[in-house]
Length: 418
Length: 84
Image 1: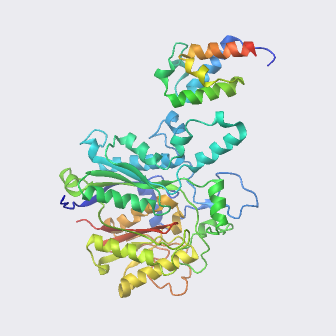
Image 2 (image 1 turned 120 degrees about the horizontal axis):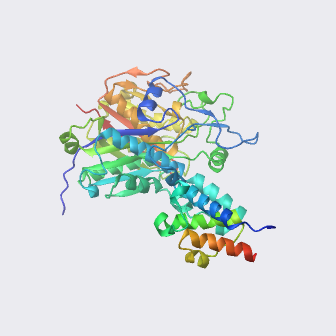
């Protein structure tokens, strides 16, 4: 039987496209400033029939520095987000993946909850209007959920494992966790991993609204995403991408790479409960965190910060807090847990990627991003949610939680590298 | 269609549509350009639809297969318009 000696995995590059900024640095700066990226919706016209008329849209997105005009026509917004985030992450890591090393030891996993739904809707409209012979040949390569991974692999000549994960809002978490394992096991030295979403479309928005999953605070969009607050009324649909470069520790050390932090644990569970509602006690979330800490070989008391899934839905936030309290016991009141979705809204399959930035920065910079709009925590919500303003703290171990419809739970454990 | 388009106008429109679709300068596309060398099969399929819309004609898959060069496409459009 094959014996595997696990190798260590570090983060050497970060890239992000969000409604807070078109780079990881800009996104992080806005988070520290407690800014909201939520605004009145502009992507498509809406009348009074629409119960939700705002979102976390990215305005003025221009991928031209990464993808030329011709290629842009062949790629959906969701994969363009991924390519721009990957471009930044790879440049940031300082290792030229296109030319250095063995391309079969470089891979990618890019998650997405929904994939190219903009293309799906446009293509379907065209089909109904003009019939089957006018459906663009680019519809399939644009809409497929693995388009992000496929395009990123081409972008950087990544010839190792290249795949996508679709587990709704946990997609990025799974992507990074599985990528970590691939490096740990020795199959690859570098993995470009993360997630992307571009699903602020008529169909998606109306469907989430029909589920009563979204906030309807139309008169005050920047205050709509309010995780843990007693007046929270649902999540805010957002879009974007974040991608990280995961690298085997010795590979990174040899080339003197900057290391943002070490990815040391991955816990994934399924609720097996309800397709769109969390188990009220958060047992799946509890177990994901427990498994992740065990995988990381750290104690619960080592954890200083949790970047919560915290979507601002009444049930979801409650379940996550219950899970954290049960797992951490008295230590739950010593650690800090914030939800940066209070600022970005909920970018579904991209959320875990975007939230890796503040998780890493808690370790790397010693600054905890706040939970904004937290005016009055709900009953029994008595943890340090880093309300409204950032906090400084020396954090050794941090968790990044993501949970998705379908009952998918992922917890990633990062450690400060020194 | 009342007046058939003159060949020069068809040519200009075809060249413009190709350049636009492929995101290149119009000067890079000539009558002699070979579809296989300027684009892939997906681009070509999309271009055929573009020509269909532009000239309000129909291009069957069999006909499209025979259009190897830009000149073939221009001639095809002209012939089709003349016969319509």
